[in-house]
Length: 585
Image 1 (cartoon, rainbow, N blue to C red):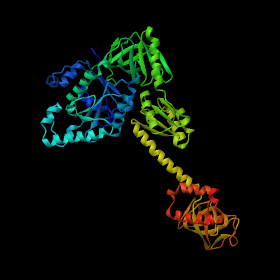
Image 2: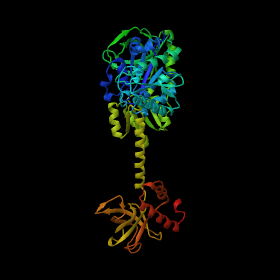
Image 3: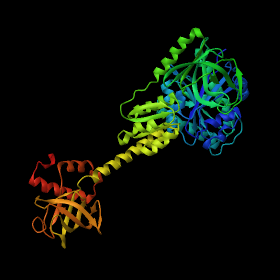
């Protein structure tokens, strides 16, 4: 008899992933979650009897017999979690269900899910959820096919329009989709099953489609091999009375209590004794149901909690093997090879990435490469003091940490505050990257503004008559800024290009200021100049620019006001007439 297929449920936040599984298992996990959003990856086994009960009359109508022993559903908060469900050569997921909200269509996280499914060559179906929200829809039957025939022509047409719109969006991924009952070849087309996770409509058809796909197309993939047990760590947790435990998706081989447990860590392969194999009861959720059956043997596919003598350093997403002594070296070799496959290419300088699992790191690092974001280190675990110290030495745009589904250590949080490190924390990769991209733009803009503040600005000023407060050492006179911006440190010249002196300070109402804009009347201290010898009352003066000033002003031209640009042209004209090569200096 084949093992049960592993089915991942993916989709955008609030699309209804967990509600769908709640309807199937008749639990209400979603009500206990923050905002109804899946917080942690979870696994639920649905036995054959439940499938047969849910599918009901459909089995008789289609004259179909289910030969699989049930299905194992994986509820994922995002495509990064799906990436954690991997084995050497691909994903451990046999099939995926992508849940799409009928009102929202394809959203960014839906796109992420479809991309990762294509990369892993994982077959999937689309559950078009919240069909009951279509205007005029009447909930008539759990079966979508029965219910749709009882709707008005207008509602039936509206449902088709929604599916056609979705077809257009999915076509962008070079995929062909159609309503499931119109698909003649599920290898070439992706079936869309309209459902309501809330009312249960369409769920019988959805279960029939995925079960049928598993039976018809997966074949050898569902065959259970003898020998060592194989799995992937979903989650690491501490349980009272048990110590450190690991929730594992067991996808092949046999796990036995008297075997050794071989597992992956950030530092390589470790081996320990298995103390207990704990299995949640059918239709219960591995992350919620804290009552387990103690078993001596586990057969795939399923979610089990393993208790080991020592599980030091184990991380989510890591491969596990269970083996007897004669197969131990082969098990260690397989785990080592899988760990090597997730080693990341990092750079000498860049940001630091912390994530909840190796699979998350894989997905994030792929996005980093696509977005050309340099990474100096990528690790599983919370943000530490060392992370803050490392990025604290970086250039401003790299003084940041990406934290995917992780928190801080106590020292790490204080170090981040002390060193002014920007942390982008979240459960959705694209939101973290979008936040970083926006921050980087703002940072670049501030850096350009700072660069402008450090550059001599183009200005035209007039020395006010009867406003000479000191003739020299330095000359202190009242001036009016007629064009541009006058800032301390600027060199001055007259209309003939003769150098006058340097602005030592600018004061307004006896207060020193960093810049005086057009229309301002201020007191200017001018070193190296004497009133009556180098310039006169009432004379017009201009700021004199170096070649470097001119180049910077050109790069920052969009930050200059119109009147600054006007006076810049005049300054260039004056300086060109004196020394045509000044821009090269």
